Image (cartoon, rainbow, N blue to C red; front, side, top):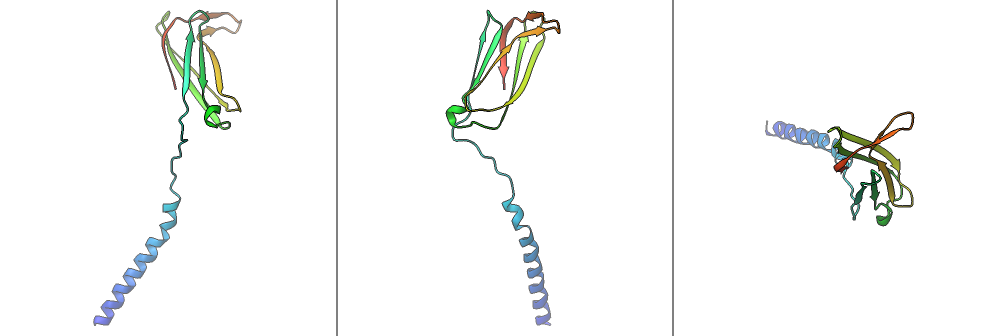
Amino acid sequence: MKTNFARRVVSFISSLSILLQSFAPIAYMTPQAAFSQEPLTNTVTYNNSQGVFHFQVNNKDIGVTSGPISYSLLYKNELTGQNENVNGSTELSDSNFSRDIDAATCSSGGVCVKHVVNQGLIK
């Protein structure tokens, strides 16, 4: 009687062990976040006389010269009181990323109306 119970306990433990070992590879496949040692920093300036935002990222300075970069600029047009949004993306190159973004609304005929901007946010 004792040997029969002992065999069942060993069989149960063996089955449980095999089941747990089948999940072991999944533990090694979980994604991990990787970060550069130096974070990307950006600089945004606004030229009020031209109505242009100048956006620059230090990607070359920290050795990031390939891969996609996306940006979103949100600002409030003080003339209309509306929030304006500019989105874009590009591939990085061997130089620091730099972009000039006009704060204006342009028609298909080429007529542009500059916005009056007091504050903005870039991400």
